[in-house]
Length: 130
Ligand SMILES: [Zn+2]
Image 1: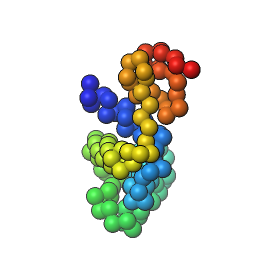
Image 2: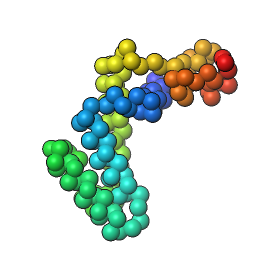
Image 3: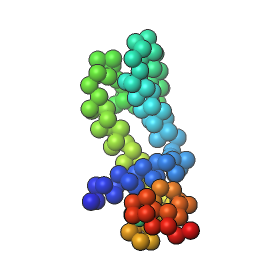
Image 4: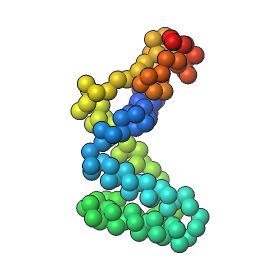
């Protein structure tokens, strides 16, 4: 149950509080974005371009751990694991550093985290507190 709650919280923080990311976290996120785009496109030249862009950014930022070759792109398990880890770590840091800025909106009936900080309806149990 705890793992599931973490996932929900991470998504909630990512969707509504990602503006609290540091410059470095933002850079990493952009690189992940380019790698993911390279992975999902079928267009070979586009793939190479996006990967080159990601690698250049990683190099400029000194993120050697983020360099990805075209071969590695075919087997993305490791990448996905790293990206999840990055998201979790970033969210943990945001929650920890901005306790006063973050409102984790929970359903008064079932205590689950609802979709947005302003939501007044729970998609988990259907409770509505408008
Ligand atoms: Zn609920």
